[in-house]
Image (cartoon, rainbow, N blue to C red; front, side, top):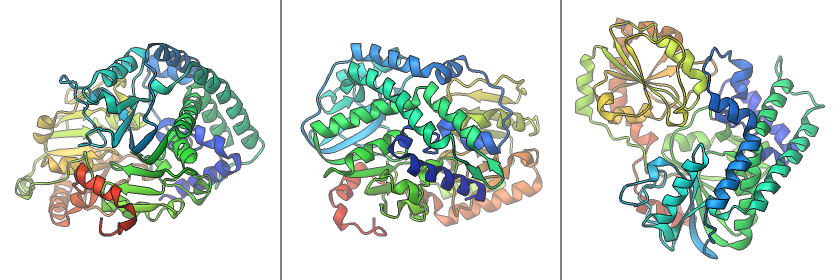
Length: 497
């Protein structure tokens, strides 16, 4: 990890410990950089000119919009009660990918799960407006597995919304009181003004309000239900930290499933000993592969968590050596670019792609969470921005250029050589630890069809085929095996799983 990033992580987590439990409400203090963008705003100059009316509205008035939205949803949602005794509670996300024409629930993270009395699903719907969220809630209530799938909105009461709103104001005051009069420096950089501005954004966007609401819901569920195990997608976000902090003193076993890749830019994964003292880590973390396991076992703040390699239920990793060997005679005419979660990088990357030879066709895939992104500059005729992944187009591409995205592994499974784009000097997009995958820096994209680059790409293809890196990153597993491991936690050996 870059020395600035490492020190930044340490200094802010130390402040979190001083602030206490209220720090878990703030994406800025939890270093959820995909939401706060604090590190980049301090150390990386952004040339982004992307304008989004929706983003401006939500970032500045979300603290008013979100409670109003939740009141609308509360009025239209059916109140439900979880079974009093639950063996396995799976917390997952719900969006358009879960909806099917047959009314069967299509699980995205815990693929293969069959919701039943033993395995209950608690879904967190994701949407921009009340209509989208209500549609998802309606699907949950009407799907074929409706008796064993619950929406988190079914447990929201109007008094919770009002309480969360007022508590968010009290909490931000508490946080400010602990930060305003202290010095916060990283080497020669004074961070206090930047942090205070981002904390105000946490409040104005409604993120602290939303996390206060999560806190109330976790308290309600822990008081009303006896739960043997809670299994959830582990990304160490605020709602997870609040969940863990609420249930850790209970007899509930908490299992975080690290279901995909992660990078240094997703800094919340790299907890410090200060974080650990706030009781934000589950007893167990199951990873998608041994690469991620080995990295997490080196994280000092996770020393008290048992970390096992499990496997990926959703990401494909198998490759065809025969088809990839054919790529050794490569000439680059078509490039498919997969952008990551961080939209701050988008303008920089797309403008840098203009340096590539104009005879090369380039498709740029926007990450699903950034569907509202619009490039406002002038596009070259050979560059096309797309918002929906098309595997057939990817397969016809000569290379896959990836920015902080797990397509760096899945691309190989589509028999397309992958190249990782390095877009900053701090290594924020680094997620391929110990890999043979070729990298290219953003300022050298004009050389992407050079003889030296092609030579290095051929070497990368051969090394990747021989390394079995894909299986080490996304170890293939099915849900039945996952449940066998969950049922036998005490007998697991970390290097046998």
